[in-house]
Length: 470
Image 1 (tube, helix red, strand yellow):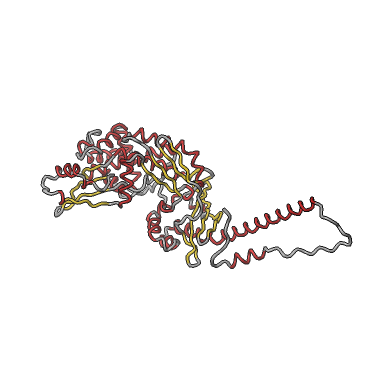
Image 2 (tube, helix red, strand yellow; image 1 turned 180 degrees about the vertical axis):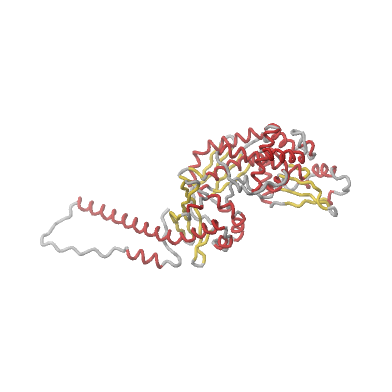
């Protein structure tokens, strides 16, 4: 796509630079005293070649100068973004965004500390390497380092009142949509991400591994859509699959919290008559199901995704394009690669776990075990470790770890991995997977935890003792 250097506002400096390069009129040739007659064809061809080369050289010079000036204009914005992240200045960070993108800005601000983990900040500010202008929008290619290796990522901006601001709009053409169907995964991607085609065998192997490990109800098929859509930013490494599993906490009128939750369900469980009957047996003193109501922690769109993942033929999964995170040649950023593996494992584990209705400790402890094992396997398969903040303390028990993760607090991911390591060492893989399968079929805590033979509280106590010996 050609570069458009039609600056809308504040373009005086660009105009002057380009005007300085305008060719002056060619000198008039002296008249010959002799008549040369018809010009030979060979001279005409040489003249044509010379004109074409001159035009190409002139366009190249203009393009190079335009790129240089464009980089100079956008570099201060990228440097401010780097400064905000490096210094933890969230006010500065927020002021860099398109004011019309309030909701998107709030999402990015929520992941503000995590974004710093994608770059080597000690190497200084990233550099603008290329600019594509599309009217009031611009696509900026940025060079940065991660673990001493060079990467490139794309960032979008929009001109607002004469100033360029970070924007979620992706105005550039990303090419035709493609998809490849394998046994356990269908991968959809756009033309500019065509390098992903060579990674599909590894992606299929990852999906197959998690299908065999967790043994979810058939079919075990992930529908993976990799999109150049800033709606899927901020990129949060190792977060698993978005959205989080639905969570409902049940309360009883005039009595408060029932202590029972539904995790990874549809959010509509109380509408099912069989569910209502089973539920009422747990509360014999409640004479009317209408006295029980659910506090829900998800949107309608999130419930729809959960229903598809639990019950439809394919489990939908969307990831942001690696070009918006970082690529090195045809290799995606290591943390994007880890996130891909962890997200695939997460959706497959949710299908195996099913909808869990149980006492809070039982449900949240099960989720800590599941997410911890997914993270362990994702790091092993991807070859990438996520270096979380070592100063973050573990939650006091496994139930608190699971509760934090299911509500979006990723700081407890390392704690969940530790808990899963403990379970695998103490009880083995078969018991951990058996716990997942029991949780989808029973409300009863004793039944759910039969594969390990102890209660959630006893598991947490044993884990704490195990940690003191580590």
